[in-house]
Image (cartoon, rainbow, N blue to C red; front, side, top):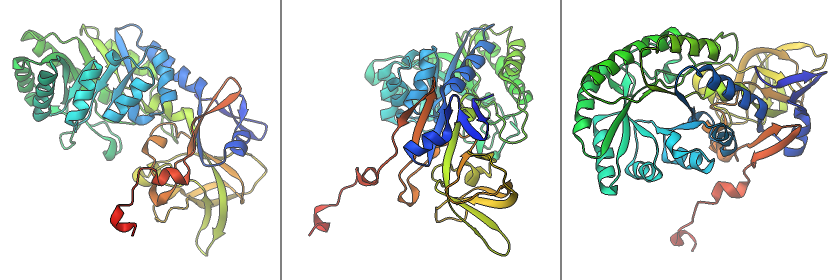
Length: 419
């Protein structure tokens, strides 16, 4: 569910007309519903109320500090994969004791930043990383809480680019090798083994891969505890999907019920890392139609947002519903909706049956609240879009639109080129 709806012929976000915001902020811009974000978080969190748990929002899905602040105020944590995401989470007010650090390529300065901040734990993804964390902790006279990320070789049945739990993926350590790494970790002076971690992929629409992975994790936890390890946390990652088109993913309550039923014999605090399921349908990308054109074979609608603003259709061939901000009695047509980027891959929809659009019309690219702005770029020297949030009948700019001066603010012309 989300709070984007039509009142008459106008698309609204909660109690504010989208066209009104567009008229004052310009386009393109990302628009988020505070009510939807909060409701989605609370629904997910309460679904796991029967077991000890910590919801660590996946910062990579949407890293705006205003959005992270919503979850921090609810007592939520953060799942991070870089020093920059750690900085954002702390800036938003997330307690460091509710932050877990994943990712295969943690740099020394990032490890030191996390240790100095006092995060809950590192999800270790390789033998060399384990050594590096121990060395950094030793120099800083710290004790690093760690879990080892297990690659359970479970097929998540999702897009191959967002599958993370198969043997051919770069993430984690296979279960057999992980036992050896856990034993080695216990011999290190500056790490404290406190958990087991696993994440099998993103945009999963079936519960069975989660349960398959959980069963393998439970076997590992029992084995480790049999060897005296104090496993306090079981991080089962995120990955629950949303509806973009015709997908029918399980509701968070259905997902939680299945996890809880299979976790009753594991005395651990469960760490959950939802991202898309909370933020995905809570945001849209609003864009203006610049031009329309036709050739003998195709109709094109050219809008002012591009693949630099929302790369998912180009990168994954992902479907996003596209709706006119103002519904009128329009005939329908089949068209490609494309952006201004100088790439043939710059599109939001191909061969889509849509209401006929004209210059100046506004469109809403739906389900863009996750992996939208966070994956955006300045390609073609395009300033990045604004981000706006609606709450209680008012809208708030939570990230201003970049100006041309922002594009070159960090660049310098060396002296030899100034002559």
